[in-house]
Length: 276
Image 1 (spheres, rainbow, N blue to C red):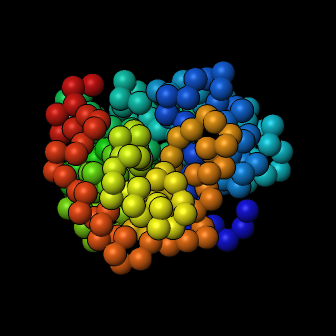
Image 2: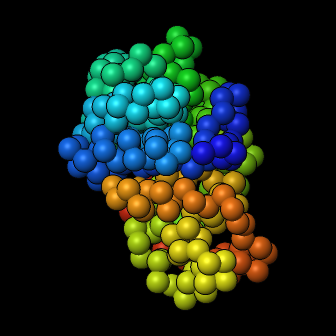
Image 3: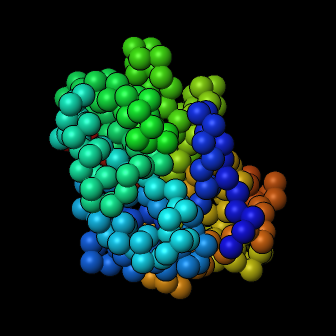
């Protein structure tokens, strides 16, 4: 599939705007899901050390042949491996698991502020980028105070911040911060873990366009300039999730979905208080 949208990161790298997430994908199902995604046209796969399926991602990409070799791969540093030396070692292990000699995007998975090591971890990521071992570096689940600290203490601005984001929890203040600093916003749990698929506002828009609720939500992310990584292990759903380039939401649609935002709409942990 050609003509997919991309975003240009603040370091000049070009990242596909739609990819496959493999959070909670069982290791023994990951390779098949990745193969199905590459066959459907996906050129971005997002994994993490804590998902325990990096090797499955690598297997799926290798089995996909030349197309798999061109996929943009993201993985993440887990909290227990934060720290300068620890992060460098964890990166090497992720490379080994993935079977690659370079990663396109490496993220600090959570700030884990109680550990007090995310700045040291960020310095390690900056070294990996300077050495050319990773194309771009970023963070996940960081809020403005964490971002301000790493930027202020290192002078290095993340290329990406991957956060919980869906129509019920739109993170507008954080997105405004990102826009001011040139940080791309990437959405995890973009479908609200399925909780939004039967919402009347979304099903009405879906009926209007002859699309599924999931396709409408994915299109909402794209039309808002967000990078989106829906997760599925079902080949038909993987294909459906990428069949979103033949329509756009109009102003009325965007207003309708924009009205779903709720300050209490968070599903996952709050990065400011998460204990892990």
